Image 1 (tube, rainbow, N blue to C red):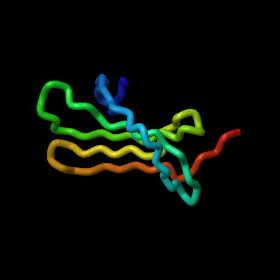
Image 2 (cartoon, rainbow, N blue to C red; image 1 turned 60 degrees about the horizontal axis):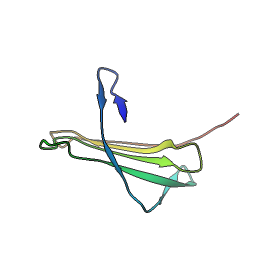
Image 3 (tube, rainbow, N blue to C red; image 1 turned 90 degrees about the vertical axis):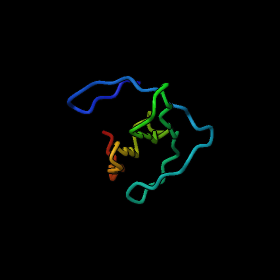
Image 4 (tube, rainbow, N blue to C red; image 1 turned 180 degrees about the vertical axis):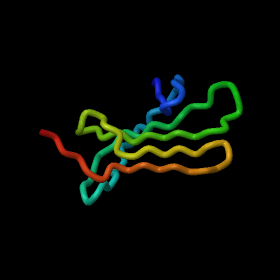
Length: 83
């Protein structure tokens, strides 16, 4: 999967967890597919995990990133409008 930070574009490999997880986003339950970043033949200094809404075209519902210094950034969907 290709992901960008806005400054750079990198290619990442993810493992799909077989069990679907429920994520609560602003009072709405989303059945999600949980993706966990795979190590790529080098010590992993950063962690990126994605939870994609299975019933909403796999839109990201939650994103978790932990950098090499242990700083954690977590984003969770708070509202979804489709017109």
